[in-house]
Image (cartoon, rainbow, N blue to C red):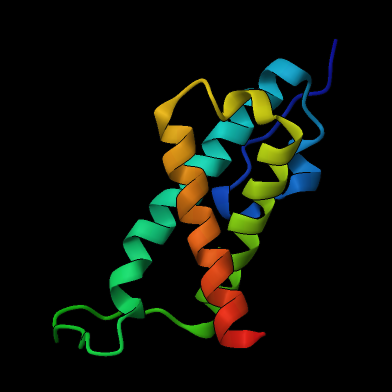
Length: 113
C-alpha cells in the first residue's frame, strides 16, 4: 500500500509540498494554492490603504508577517503557474488569480525594492 497522506494546513502549502504530487493531483493542489493566494489578496487589500482605519470591533489588521506570507504565497503561485502554463488559458479565474498575485508582487517590489 502507498503512504498515507495527512492533511496539511493551507498555510503550510509550499512549492516543495506541491511538487510531491503526481501531475493530475499537482494540478488540483496548484489551482487551490493559486486561488487561495488570490482570496488572501482580496481579503487583505482593504487593509493596505493608508487612509483605511480599522473599525473598533475588528481585532486584526495586516501585519508585516502576514504581508510577507502573502508575498511568499503569491510568488509560489506564480512559479507554479509558470510550470503549468497550460492552465492559464483554461479558466478565467486562473487569469484573475494570476493578476492578483502579480499585483502583490509588484507592490512589494515597488515599496521594498
